[in-house]
Image 1 (spheres, rainbow, N blue to C red):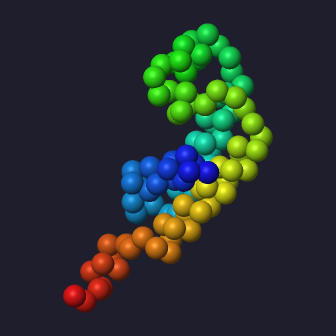
Image 2 (cartoon, one colour):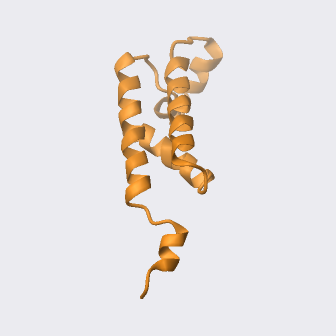
Length: 96
């Protein structure tokens, strides 16, 4: 869940003025594609997974339950983004 939330905020940083629904969809699609790539056991992909740190990024075993966790993590990140992170217009409107 934390990894998928990080992916959502990566999209939020890259496209700060994009809609939250778009960022949520992009994060879920990215997370699902990484999880589904774990079904591929090509030698070149396994060589990349064996590089330091890449196993954390690409994973090493497909689990259907991870897909549910990704949806939950992205949803929680979306809620945080929509309700607790100040937008530029909100910051300007604040009086000090």
